[in-house]
Image (tube, rainbow, N blue to C red):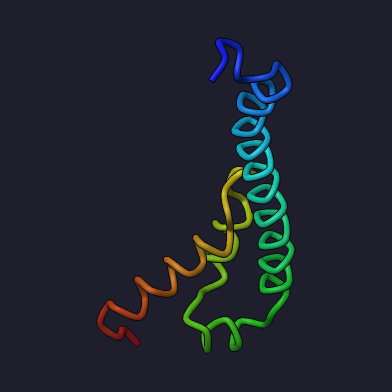
Length: 91
């Protein structure tokens, strides 16, 4: 083994690979959030009786859609539907 066993190119690759992986992961998260926001917009166009069928109220959808752009509105809607499903029925 020589004293200079690593080439400068391998050092660059070792330092850039984690940064590239992190950047790619962030880009994938942004695209996923954008696509989920589009799906949530389609859910917001549903009539109230269909929203009730999936366990949501119009207020839940409105709250999720007006969250920060970095937050996933479909996650907020799923959490609201889950809370409603676990709570006792109120008529």
